[in-house]
Amino acid sequence: MDFWKSVLLSCITGLTFAEKVYQPTECPGLYCGKKELGPGEYSGCGACPRGYQPEYNSICSECTSNPTLYDWLYLGFMALLSLLLHFFFIDYTNQNKKSLVVLHLSALLESVIAAFLTVLLTDPLGSLMIRSCPVSRLEDWYSMLYNPSPNYTTTFHCTQEIVYPLYTIVMVYYAFSLLFLMCLRPMISLRFVECLGTRSIYAALYFLPILIVIQAVFGGLLYYSFPYIMIIASLVTSAIHMAQGIQQGFTDLLAENFKNMRNLTILIGHWILHCYGIISLTELKQPDLHVPLLLLVFFPVIFYVVTTKFTHPDNLDKTE
Image 1 (tube, rainbow, N blue to C red):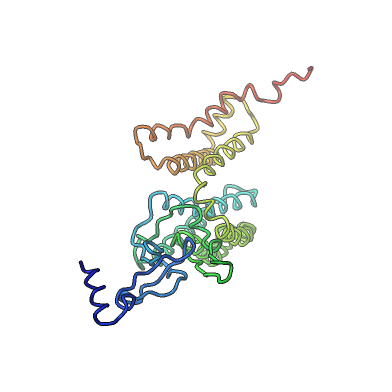
Image 2: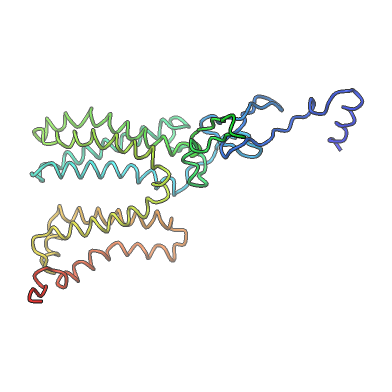
C-alpha cells in the first residue's frame, strides 16, 4: 500500500517517483559496491572500504564475523612456515648442534611476539579476537583480476581485500618477524653463541621477503591447499630424516631416533605437523571418524622402520 500511495502522491504533486524513492541497482562485476552516504543515498560503483564486502544490491556492508577454525589454522600455518624455516637455517648453517638451542628459542620468541602484536593491532585494536570477512571462493583472494569493463569502455576499479584481514595480516606478521629478528637475534648470537647465528640471520633476511611475495601472489592457493601441503611435506621430510641415519637396521633406527634427544625432537615435530595437517583437512567435524585418524601420524615412521630391511641397498641382488 505504501508503494501505491507514493505513486499517487507523485502524480498529484507533479513530482517524479524517482525523486522520492531511490532503489540502488547492482554494480557490474563480482566485487564492485556502493557506499551508503545517507538515508537513500549511495555512492557510485567502486571498491568498498577496508573491512567491508558488497552484499545485496552491491551495497557495501561491514564484516562483523570472526575467523572460522579453518581461517585460524591457515594463519597458524603461515606463522609455522616462517618459524620452521628459521629452525632449518639455524641448524643447516652450523655444524655445532649442541650450542644452537638459544638460537632456536630466540626464533620462537620472535615469532610469538610478532604474532601477538599482529593480532593486537588488527581490528578491534587491543583484542585477541579479530573481525573478519567470510571467504566464499578462490576468486575472493584476487579481486584485482575482476575489475569489470562494461562494453569495454570504462573500467570500474574495485580492487579490495575481500578476505579481510587474511590477506594482509600475514604480511604484517612477516614484517614484525623481520623487525624482531634484526633487534634480538644479532645480540643473542653475539652474547651467547659467539656469532654462530650470523648466517641464519642472513638467510632470514632473504626468505622473509620471499614469503611476503608468496603470500601476495599465491595466498588464495595456499589457503585452500595448505592441509595437503603439510601432510605431504611431513611425510617426505620424515622419510628424509630417517634415511639420514648411518645404520639402517631395525634396532639401530629405533635406538638412533628414540634415544637421541635431538632426533626424537625432530621426530615429534614431524608428528605434530602431520597432526596439524589432518586437523586442518577434517576440522574434526565428525569426531567419531576424524579423531581416530590422528593415530595415522605414527604410521610413516612405523612403516619405514618395519620395511627398512627390504629397501636397504645392501640387500639388493647385484648379480642380476
